[in-house]
Length: 166
Image 1 (tube, rainbow, N blue to C red):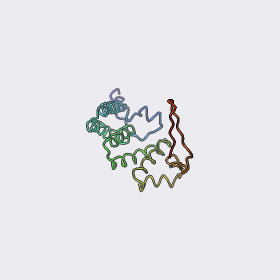
Image 2 (cartoon, rainbow, N blue to C red; image 1 turned 60 degrees about the horizontal axis):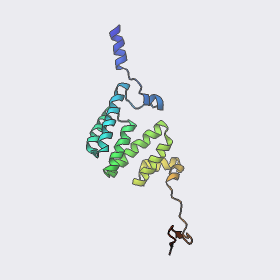
Image 3 (cartoon, rainbow, N blue to C red; image 1 turned 60 degrees about the vertical axis):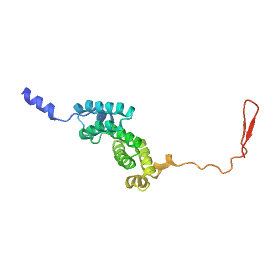
């Protein structure tokens, strides 16, 4: 009987603290893997701090094997792809993150991610679809027009000199 109880507890998936907090029941990561995921992220952070992006990616790829939908792992990968100036991987990772943020209801992060995605790839299907669903998504990325006439600009300094704009 004790053996059966052990098997029952051992083989059934437990929810992680992140899943419970965010009501995200779809990350497919059991609580026993949570420590491993965090350890790999910590290792990756150290490598990233010292500029060893390829070594950091090795640890993050291990996380993708354990939990391919793990948001923190994808966020770190995005940082690496930005650092390496790998635009195509940035686009791919932003797409994954946008979907995950939308799934868990992180709408501010979803909108910010769509904005980043559109900045890199204005024709991106996911970003275009997000715009069609909610045209206000891009409201934070618009730039206000600068007035053409700025007036007479005069600058005065402490030593009694002045500059006038042409």
